Image (cartoon, rainbow, N blue to C red; front, side):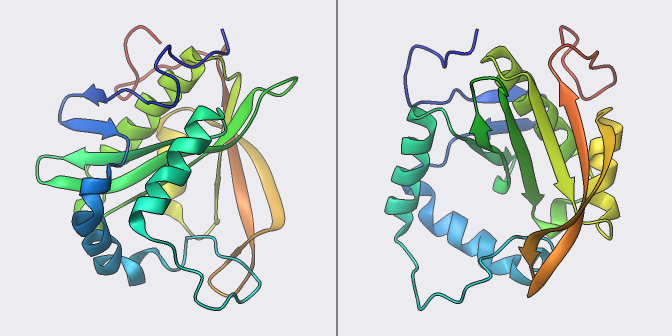
Length: 199
């Protein structure tokens, strides 16, 4: 337990019905950039940013993919694209992974506005949670702004425990925002239509 698969630095493709999770590839650049641009306003109220203004520090997409692969090799992140029948439609990642006594990480996710509300995100979160638990993580948590009821519903549908509020937890949309934290551990039952029957 606790070890990544033998293909170090590589994540497998995970699938349940029509929902596919896979790592980003350099060939995804045009599709990814178009998806991000189309959803900029939709995601702005929910995505964390740096509180310190940084002058034009954008990196190339190829460098972004290389950085993600390095984090996977270091076992610090499990980033996946959510792929639907029409291509990439979102993102789910376990980041901030700590091993040692904690063996935990945080789940983040987003989906194209046109695909929201179809049960894709709960399926994606369940798939990736199952995977990281099999890799040895003990605990995963989801932190959402209290105003983001749709995101909180994802955690609730999957049986994540409500652990309360973290005040002024992340810098989002120009200010420090409170977040409601939900968590699940590997030894808790995972029951419901989004989980693998063997969980």
